[in-house]
Length: 81
Image 1 (tube, rainbow, N blue to C red):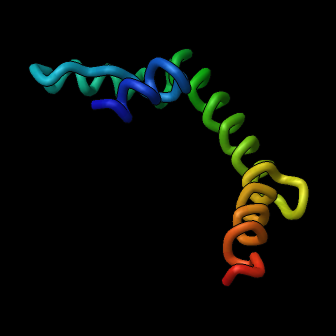
Image 2 (image 1 turned 135 degrees about the vertical axis):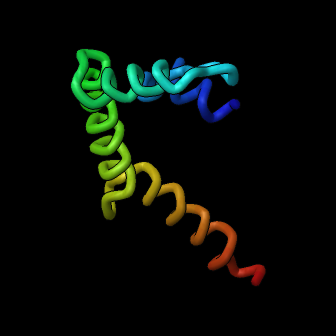
């Protein structure tokens, strides 16, 4: 539930559906995602998040890359080991 809530409310890339759902409701939501305005907006957001993730992992300037490099240097390559 937490992942669904986070994707829907914070990232804006999901839909919320309750547990007591009928087939026609699911069909309508899927159609909206595939061809509707909400689906197109979500696709733009997903592409934005994808680009941000790629930038974060690029060598040697991405933030994720720099953090893992720092971790390796401080912990694994320290003179104490």
